[in-house]
Image (cartoon, rainbow, N blue to C red):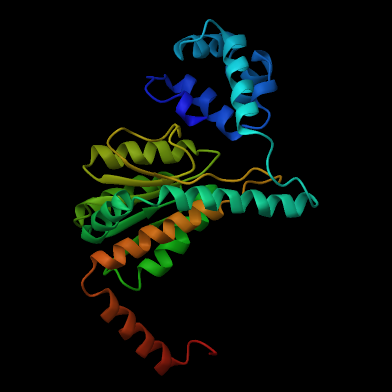
Length: 270
């Protein structure tokens, strides 16, 4: 579906509608303009203008195209099992898509170099993305000389970003997942204004907090359960971590030193 939006300059409101269609791809061909407007949190005329911006006569023409694409794609191969099994199968499909995207590692390798060169390295993730940021920061601290985790919002967040820039940071890694916190958008604006190069791991190229200058890495979340699951974005974050390790000449030495200290202190049972 993303190909439908490529090559079009969309307003923030239109990007919101597009993102809603992507996240609800299975039901999108059957939504009325009023239903889509309600789901996206926009007005019904905005949906009509969105369709026209994509080159259609109106929303009905866009919906017909979405239905044609659905027929061309066919039904999902596996509808068996209960809701929990189908959720796992949906996540597996997202991981397959991620694997296909990673056939060209250029962007991942560039992200690894940028993050390796930043001293310190701030890692940002709020609300739904806080777990991804914490996981990355935990492991990254074993190979990177200084990692600063930013997983709480509030007035202190801007202060901590300023402190990282003053200490010499050149890049920021940000995890952003739906729903997109307003504080993340504000923090990213401040980071860019301060000269930080943003590497973003998110669920869609249509995320409303991205900027054209960001190095954007995407992996879809799954919406099969009441709350989104983010196995693919988490794994994408780990591939960035691996690329950063490759770009750090002393990464293995730091890991060996940590293992020695851990054994001396009896940190682990195995």
